[in-house]
Amino acid sequence: MRLVNGSTLRVRHSGLASSAAVGRVAVVGGGLAGLAAAALLAEDRRWDVTVFEKGEVFGGRAAETAGEGEHCTRLLLPDYHATRELLSGIPGADGHATVADAITRVRRMEWGPHGNWIELDHINRFRASGLSARDHWAIYRQRRQKPIVAAIHGSNQNTFGSWRQYSPASVVAMLRNAWQADRIFSFPGSTNHFLVAPLLAHLEALGVELRAGNAITRIDLTESREDVFDAVIIAAFPSDLAALLDASGVPHRLPRSLRHAHCKVLTIALDPRECVLATSLPRLYCRAGIAVLLQPHASRCVVLCTRAESTDDAYVLALVRRFLALEHEVGGVLTRANQAQGEAVWSATMPKASRVLRDRPAGIWLAGSWLASGYPYDSAESAIRSARLAVEGLSRAAGNRLARS
Image (cartoon, rainbow, N blue to C red; front, side):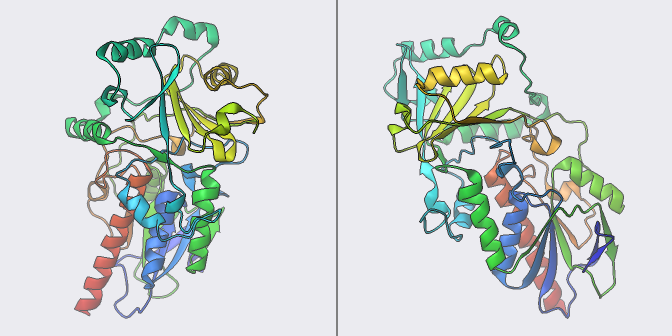
């Protein structure tokens, strides 16, 4: 074991030993970035990989926690190239050859100006064809919020980051990406079932050691050649990363006072007899500040409360009943407040890993959906891209070291 007292990780300060045929790498953080890094390392066959997760469940925000349901609607965009590439190599669930094969197109629904749901051919309602300028204006007006109603229905517990936390360049990149994306995709049901479980099974098949309930609170950088990891990839949210680096005496430049986005999500089991479930493809209904992802395959919907007048369960459930024209009692409602720091969506300019650790020890690498990776949003795509950058950097450094020796 390369642990001291179960929480201190011993890592070689100078990185991979020149005489090592197989490097030993620790991944701290069992979210999507950490699991992606482990998969990329293990597929290389040059690395002996161990993943440490402080919680009892792997998957991070992608995992459905016990009694709380989904973290978000888990939508994917057409330019999730790194995500599809990774998932195309992982055996899928429910007869799908790969996890990527389970990804399904979502039909985008909008409440039309004539009091009915209409399907848009573009995720951005302003770019959808078949609507007149008057229709666009009517849709815009009905989406405007009426804050006075919030006091009647209850409080809104969501919090959002400020646009002041973004640089002009990052805002332009986000807007350009949003303007170019024309379609959306999702899994047909539970993210645990279609993504997290297959990914964990794939890692175990590759020989990756998965250690849940094992919080790493300190990294001991040493030049010892025995009982140490050659490198560590830390895939943690900034607050956890800062605490770990501080305890390890590693200087960093992490922002500490930023406020990020926390939005409540409801996962609702529907009666299979509901007429709205007769469709085969998932649908996304957007109205009144909530986004409802209907997943007919799983007889359920996932509700993301963004700009809702209230996030009270009863109020949101009443909206869902009305929007989906439900005729039967729901099977159950799981609520996820998403108020913990690690459940936030990063709402600021994404920093480069090289700026966070300007004087980075050779044995430490960073990954995470909040790091700059070439994708403008905190998302599954940015998580996997950051993991790929960390693994590529680690492999390149190891190759250079072996070449020099």
